[in-house]
Image (cartoon, rainbow, N blue to C red; front, side, top):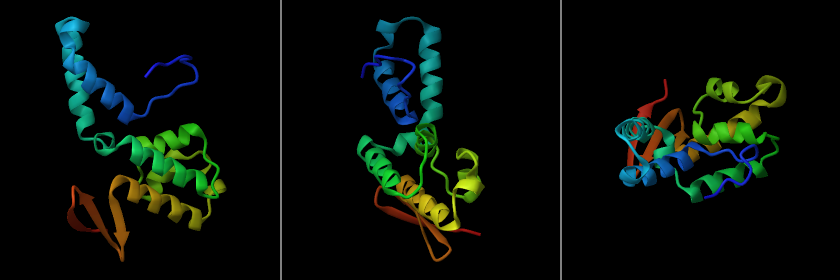
Length: 142
């Protein structure tokens, strides 16, 4: 990937995570011990975040779903939803400017459901089922 104009392009956490994996393989080419340590620490931190479980196809499908909703979100708001998919109204309100003025309850639920599907959590009857590699875990939502 090549960034032609740095003012225009913004990378998602998934893209940064992939770049870190690729550069970590070539650490001898890039340089010294400090650089390797930084790459290792950032990679370890991002392994436990949502970006480690995302794929370009999944992100593309999520963005299409967001585009087809009757909600006008900015590019930065969409990026925040991708980087840290919200699972509560509070998290959603922190990522969207003027949240309470712009969104109705129905639109909020639509966004939350889309985010839960994107992150692998599906809410059914007050129970959140987290799907990871075909295994299902159920947690009480209360």
